[in-house]
Amino acid sequence: MMITITCPIKQDFIIELLNDVTLDGIHYTFKQKDGMKLLFEHSGSDQEAAIRLAKERIKETEIGHVLFFQIA
Image (cartoon, rainbow, N blue to C red; front, side, top):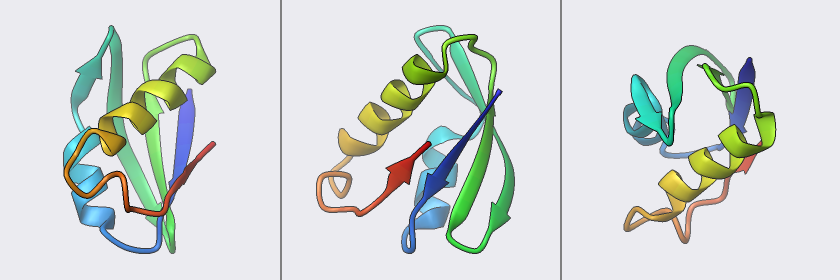
């Protein structure tokens, strides 16, 4: 399954943060960059959990609370 993270800035930061990372049994792999959209494949069967965990991972960083991004 795939998630799309839309973020106009700090894209490399997000890629480095989530690529080849496993969070609560869900493994994320960066697949493609398309303008402001970053596409990640994940191994989980629960799309909502994959989105929630990725969002938490970004927000727990020192810049995550001020970074504008959207995950679908």
